[in-house]
Image (tube, rainbow, N blue to C red; front, top):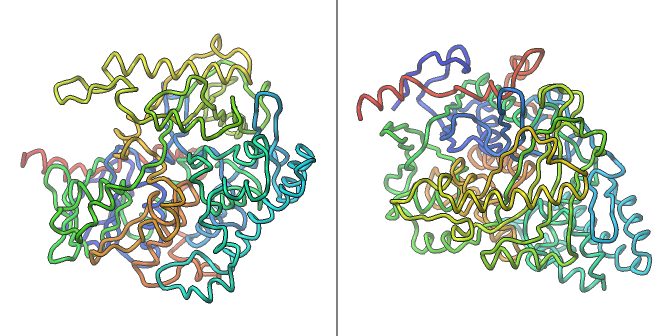
Length: 574
C-alpha cells in the first residue's frame, strides 16, 4: 500500500510517496548507501529506521545542546582514492564531505607496559619502524608485512571470490590469498617466528574488529592495516553524522525517502517471494524488493515467519557466533585536550597476550585491567566548533567486554524493571567506567577533576537502540570459520529479499558498511556498480544536492523524518 505523508519539519519539502521499488530496513551507513545508489539509479526507495535519528552507528549525539559525541565513526582510511572515495564519488559526494587527516607519523599510538609504538602511514615506513623496534626479528617482520601487502595487491586485481568464481583461475591470480587469506594471524606469526611483543604490536589495533588472533583471518587484518597504510587515517569534519546526512540528501534528491520512528516488525513473504513489510502499529508497506540491514539473527529469527525459511537455515543463523561487544565511556572536559594529546588515537595495552583479554569475555567476566582505546573528536577536528563549549574537549574511551547479563547485574525476568534501572547493572556500569578512566589517566594525566559530563554505553545500550544480538556492533564475528564465502551473501534464498550490513561478506566498519551497500544495490539491479564508478560513472542528479554549507546541521538533517500522519492513523486504529 502507499503511504500518506504529512509535511514534517526536518524532511524534504514534499516527501516522496509510494508505490516503492525497494524498502531498506535500517538506516545505518550500509542501508543508506544502498538506498542512495538505488535512488540515484531511478529506483523509488523507502528507508525505515526504528530510532528517531537516522544514521545507525555513524550517529553523533548531543548533551545539553553543547556536547557532541560520536557513536561509531572514529577514524577512517581510503578517502582520497580508496574504497570510501569510490563510494562517495559514484553519487556525487566526494567533494562535498571534508576529511581531516590525523598525524601521518603516528595516527595510532600503542602503549605497552614498557614501550610505545607509533603507527605511521605507508607500508615502507610502518615496516621499517617495526624493524627498528625489533631488529632481531627483521626477517620475520618483513615476511609478515610482505604477505599482508601481497594479499591486498592480489585482491585489488582478483577481488573477493564468490559462488561464481572459477577457482583455478582465481588461484592463478591470487595465490597468496588462497594460501594465507583464510588462515589465522597466529598461524602467520608462528610461520614468521615472531615474538610475543612484536605480535602484540602487529595486532595493536585489532580492537577495530574485536577478534582474538587465533581466530582472526589474515585477510581481515591485512585489509584493516592496508586501508590506513595507503593514504593515512582521517576523521570526518563535523563528526560521523555528516556521512549519514549527505546520503539522506542523495536519497531525497533522487525521489526516495528516509523515515524514522518506523520499526519493522515483520518482513512479508508470499509463496517464497518478499512482498513488503509490516511496521509496529500494523502499517503495511508493499515493495518487490526488501533489503534488511538489521541484525542478522533478528532478520531471520524474528522478522521472518519460520515457515518461509529454507530447511535448516534457522539453525545455521542461530549458530553464528556474535563479535565481542564494546563498552564506551563519553567524557566532556573543561580544558583543551590538545595541550596533552597529539592528533593520534591511544591504544593502552596492559599486557602482550591478546588472547588473555578475550578469555575474560568467553568466561562471562570483566577484565580487571582492560585494554583502553582513547580518542578525541576535539583533537582530531580542532577547527570545527560544534563539538564542545569554547575551551573544552571531548574524549571517548572504549574496550571490549562480555555480553553476559549476569556479569552486568541484569535480571532478565519479565517482571524486573528495565535493565537501566536495576541497581546491579548501574553498579557494573559505574565500575567499568571508572576502570576505563583509570586507564586514560595513565596516558593523559588527571581527568576526573575536569569532567563536566560523563556517561557510558554498554552492550545493553547497543541492543536497545539497534536491536543487535548480544549487544554486538560488529555483527557476527569476523573469524576464520565465519569469513569471506562463509558469511551470508547479499542475495537470500527468498526471492526479492536481500541482506546488507555488518554480518554480510563486506564485514563491519565504515568501509565494510558502505561498500556492502554498493554491493547489495548491484545485486538488486543486476549490475556491477563499483566497476561502473571505476569507469567514471556518477549516478543521480548530484547538481541538485543541497546538504552542507553555512549553518547546516548534520544531526538536525537526520532528525524528525517520521511520517506523523501514518503514526496518527496507527494510533487511532489501535
